[in-house]
Structures are given as structure tokens and as C-alpha cells.
Image (cartoon, rainbow, N blue to C red; front, side, top):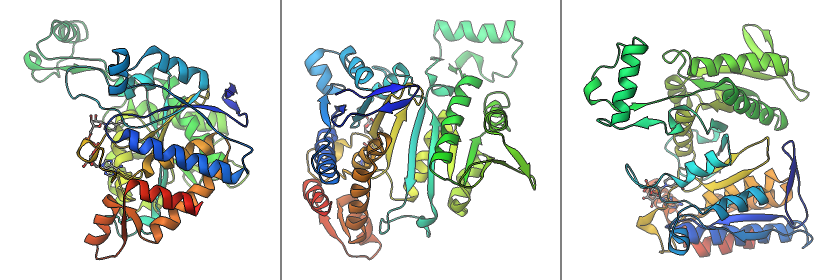
Length: 405
Ligand code: NAD
């Protein structure tokens, strides 16, 4: 049956329909393993009384082959109806050509929060000395900023019009090389910023976190990124009753007051290496969020295991996804690490309130990694660190993981 939502609050039946998109490259391998793992965890946690009704939807190369378009309308419709989907990676051509399907999905469904939990599993090889101090959840604004896709190419008729408007109507004198410039536009609204910041604060309250940090470049981009910072503090005050104490800002919460602070993005990127324990929930703009999420993911084991989701907390619609790409160099070899999409599946179970099944998988993953049973990407890093381990194929890793549930 379908999940429904009232003002963002989900009603989840015992057999919710969930859409899945396999994705390109390694997509099929990891998506199948994720479905096996989630099915086994749900069966075990609820003694067969609950089960996910998986519904396949097409996107990427398989969609082009079967329908002639990379993101068919039926796929968007299916996600709108089911509310929740999970997807493998999709190929995005660089430069000219088709638009990113990921961006199209986020914009069409207005999935305004990109949520990336950054959590360390004991035993994962890491480039930092104390990865166990990294424990953050990044809320990245997903629909605005320089990422909105409003840009014009050098030499185009449009770019000439825009430059002429800026110079002649707006008195802009700062375009250094007007004859050869491409131009991009950076829209950042109060409405878009506030709904993202509220999602981060609500998450912090619901999950008993310590602080929310607004990460921005407001020192340089005063109205856009500076606006994000200002609207963040204003929202904390207006909607959450923020108060000041010893020069710090807090919002009252029943299980311990939460600090609201801010940090300039370049300093933040240094601080997450030098003192990651200072940060907890992060709210940031689209481009900063892209860099910050990947830098943080690298600190706790990188690309193969970082989960993510794109969520509209108002409609309830959410697309969970593997955060890595299609990994064409290892596709079809049964060596890809399936944990990014499996842990995204864990986020999805938590999102629909099936915490018992989520915990079973999380514990099994911890146990696998701490015993050194990993896929080739992590195994190679372990060997480089002089540690021993067991290198498993994708399918063998998933079978052992399921046995541990
Ligand atoms: P990539 O993430 O596919 O691969 C980078 C490197 O990491 C490769 O060596 C790959 O083998 C390795 N890797 C990635 N995931 C792994 C995993 N789970 N286990 C083991 N090794 C893993 O990045 P790329 O090569 O820059 O991009 C390839 C394609 O993927 C591009 O078309 C890009 O646009 C697309 N992409 C899609 C998404 C998405 O759909 N969310 C995200 C990023 C990139």
C-alpha cells in the first residue's frame, strides 16, 4: 500500500510501496544487494509482519533504451505517488548534453534538503588521526544557489544581453573580461534558506543533537550567503525562542538546549580536520554543501560507504541514494562496495520509523567492518595501513552481512 503524508507526517502501512531505480554502471549490483539486505532485516525485525513492496522505476541508460528518454514522466509520477524512492548512481555527461537526472529529480520533486550523515564505523581506514571524533549530519540546500542551473555560455547572444544589462542598466563595472565571460546567477531566497535551516534545527531537536552550525561565505557574498546566516539566526529567535548566554546563542529543547552558531566555509573546511568534535548538525547552501559533504565523507572512509537522501519535509517526498558515482571502472566485477546504498536504505527505514530493522543493519555493518571483513576498496586501504583483513566480493560481503542480522 502507499505511504501517505499529512503536513509532512507520514502514515506508513505494514507493506509500504517504495520505488527503486537501479542506476547506471555499478547501480544494478548495489541496488539488488540493498534490497536483499533490507528485506532480510525487515523480516527479522518484525517476524514477517511487515514487508516492503518494491516498485521498479526507470532512469538513466535503461530508461533511454526502453523509452527513449533518461527520466520518463512515469518515474516522476511513481515517486510522487509512492512518496519514497531509493536509487543507484546515474551517469551525468560533463559539459554539453543531457541535464543531470539527479538535479532534475531534486528540482521536479522540490527535494530541498540534501541530508548526509557523516558517521564513523570502527575499523574503517581513514586519512585522519581521530575519525571517531567526526559525527555530523549535513543539511545542504538543494534547489537554489549557483547550482540552480541559470547560466549562459561565453559568446552566446544571451550572455551578451545579460552583460550589457548589468553594465548599462545596473552600473556594474566589476566584470573583468566582459568580452569572454560566461555568466552564472546565484539565487538565494529567505524562504528557501529558512525551510532548510528549520529542517536542520528540527532534526537536531528530534535527535538530541548538541548544536546547529550555519556554514556560509557571508564575509564575501554579503546578501546571498550573508542572508542565509542572518535568516538562520532570525528563525532561531522567531520560531524556536533562541536566547543568548555568555555570548552564545541557544534554543531551548526539552532534552538539552541546542547551540546555534555559524562558521565561514573556508575556516570550516580547516576546522573539520583540526577539531571536528566542535560540530554536530550543519546547515549550509548548495555549493558549500557539496564540497563539505564530500570532504567529511572522506574523513570517515569516503565514497564507497557514505549514505545520503534528498527530502522535502513538507510533502514527505524523499529520494535516498548512493552518494558515489557509477564507478564505470569496476562495474560488473562484483567488487563494488554496496554500503553507501545499504546505509541510505538504513536512513530510509529510519525515515519511515522502522528503527528496529535499521538498527539490525547498522549493528551488522559495524560488526563486519570491525572484524575486517570488507570489500576491495576498504581492504586495499587496510593493507596499506599495515592491517590485516578479509577481502570479500560484493555478493559475499552482502551474504555475510545478512547472516549477521
Ligand atoms: P565515481 O564515484 O563513479 O568513481 C570515483 C572512483 O571511486 C572510481 O575509481 C570508482 O571505482 C570508485 N568508487 C566509487 N564508488 C565506489 C564503491 N561503492 N565501491 C568501490 N569503489 C567505488 O565518480 P566519477 O568517476 O567521477 O563519476 C562516474 C559517473 O558517475 C559520472 O557520469 C558522474 O556524473 C556520475 N555520478 C553520479 C552520481 C549520482 O548519481 N549520485 C554521483 C557522482 C557521480
